[in-house]
Image (cartoon, rainbow, N blue to C red; front, side):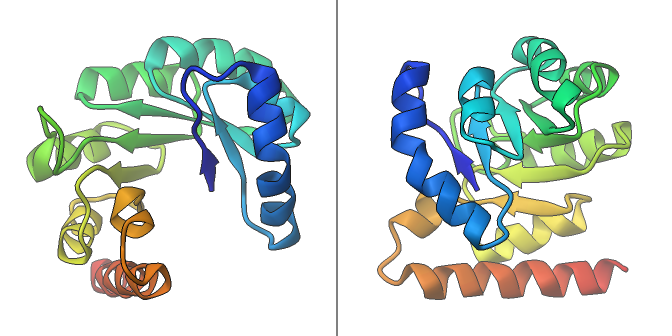
Length: 172
C-alpha cells in the first residue's frame, strides 16, 4: 500500500498517514510513502517509492540504510537501467496503458528484460490488461482509480487478483 500526497509537507504526510500506516502494519501489509523519506521514517514505513530516478539515489541513501525497500517509477529502458544501477529494489513502469504517452506492452516487455529487479506495471489497468502486463514480464500491477472509483471496490480487487493470479500461473 502506498501513500501518495504530492505537495503536502512532511508534517502533513505524517499526520494524514499515521492511521493508515498503523492499519497496514496490523494487517501485515507493506506500507510505502511516496517521495518523502523523513515521513517514511517517521511512519515506520516498509519503504519509499520515488516518482523519478533522480529522487531514487537520494532515497536509497536515506532509506535503504535502514533496510527499507525503495522503488522508482520509470518509463524507458534507459531510466530502468539507471534506477537499477542506483540499487533500487523494484521498478514501477508506467503509464503502461493510460496517460498521454503510454509505454505499452512492447515498452513494458523491454524494460522487464533490461533489469533484474522486479517490475510492476501501472496506468490504465483493467483486469484483462493486467493479465497482459503479467505476461509481458511484470510481477504485479498498481491500481488506483480503477479500484477507488469502482462501485464495488472489493469486487474490483477480486477481479484484478483473479486476472493476475491466472496470468502468473500460466507464465510459470
